[in-house]
Image (cartoon, rainbow over all chains, first blue to last red; front, top):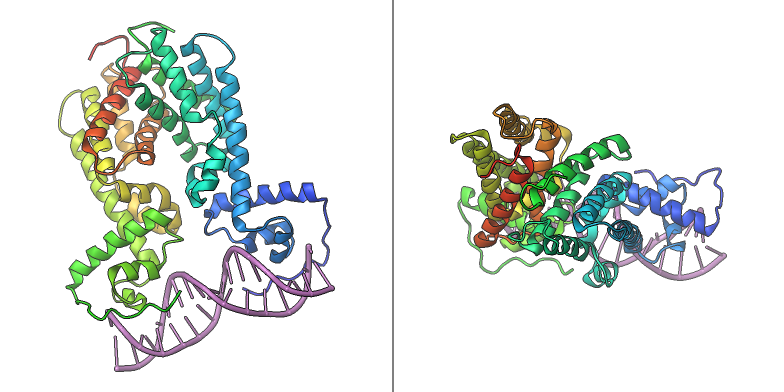
Length: 208
Length: 208
DNA sequence: CCTACCGATCGGTAGG
DNA sequence: CCTACCGATCGGTAGG
């Protein structure tokens, strides 16, 4: 490749603004090519700055991935936590969380995909830094299932842990085929997931 | 890294044997690091040959990935096709496919993971070469769901296409947390999936 | 299969 | 933020 030429016209932007722009652009490149194949050269090209200039904002390439993953995990967990805490029976709250999590994935498809594909590209300690809060996705789903079993709405014969893993994993798998930002489609998917999973989990033949 | 030294002792092996050994070793490296980060240097190191010698077997790095993906797709599709064709009602066959596909994933975790992560690393035409047969996973699941709806065992209100996508995607998502080769665990997972999905899909309250 | 290479690209740095 | 680099590594090749 020919050495990247300096833009004849470039505009220096405030640090904060550039930083969030950097994260958006980088996330898009990582989404398209994968973290490893996403070069700082391409990211800086799209930003319209020199590759070396990225180091005004970061200390390593990994800093970018970390920031993206940290952010999506934080807002995603806040989303389901809020939905789970809004009252109702356990099965009602589970249904709300199922829908809300799917809508979240559709709305944040790029970042969610990166989260589900590139966590392992981080060193173990930085993974823990992201995941290691007092609460977590698996914990939240486990609690909802457990409460449903206690209140008798979810079949007691199901293994709580395994069932929670299956439900969360199934919801997360939608990132593979969902279209970004298509809220209508996301609602349809959420409705189907609600029907299938809730019917599959409920004890007896309680109508909902 | 210090230039790799020639092994003082190496054994030349028959071409066929080396080739399958190469695919196994390469799959393991790709599984651990991802295709892009899996270097030919590391693969040849583990094989105990020189990097350049790989080109006695391949014409490009991509050939390795293609062979791995081609193979796992072929045997996996043969597996579910066989299970779906063994007779019984549609819901019975679906249940059999659910269990068999999960056991397959557990038994071929490395290759399945590569398939679900690295297909997009191939050029579009080589992807089609793998996926483009007359039959396919999505098609098979769609047919099973459709037949179940026709026979009245699966709720007609569910969108056939979307439901098939959800079921297949949910089963595939297990590669993320399954342990390779643990058949007991795989049976438990399959049983739970069977319970949850079948109950979630069946019309009325037919007991199974 | 090995030896001995090559051009391209990578993440990163010094100094401004 | 840019210029001007660097060492390391990558996939791949010629010739045997």
